Image 1 (cartoon, rainbow, N blue to C red):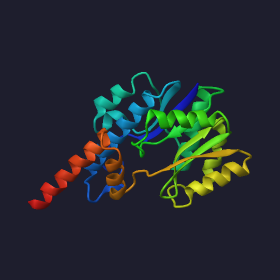
Image 2: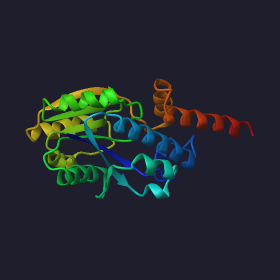
Image 3: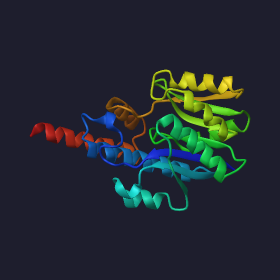
Image 4: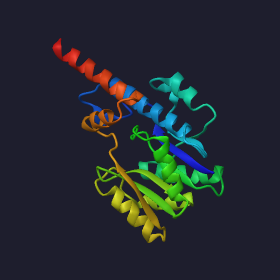
Length: 226
């Protein structure tokens, strides 16, 4: 059974989704992050035939919507993130899952693509069964998903610059140099800035994320009239 790994930060104001500020405040950005995380957790939980794991930076108890997020992860394996930067935290998360679930393939996503569906995740898991790895590139040049038949191969991420316009290309190149056959997943827009939040919310209006973005937009309009 494939491990579906969510790598996320606890939605603590000032520590998460800071690129939404401005126009959002740190508290509003954290509320948007919490909604995105809850949508992602729900989608993973609804995906058949996978083992859900959360690699978490921080503590849910310290963030927005703590009770609901804690309830949503009941029954999950929750691992603390470790490492000095994002690249190392990702590599360590895959290694920790390999230790906890020997011999399992891993499909890793983040909390920046609340438009995911159980069908899209199940399709990525099926694709991973035929290749060494799958990589879902993001529209901004990064990536939103990485699947590995052998999660220890994620060690190559330590040498890849993260959060750049070349991260997706460099990740694929690093895997290929390591002898890993990589198949592409669909390109998605992930949520970094405010324009991304608006676009993703408009494309998936039924989720908590879209409702929270709409609530923040209303607050901004009201605040602007004062």
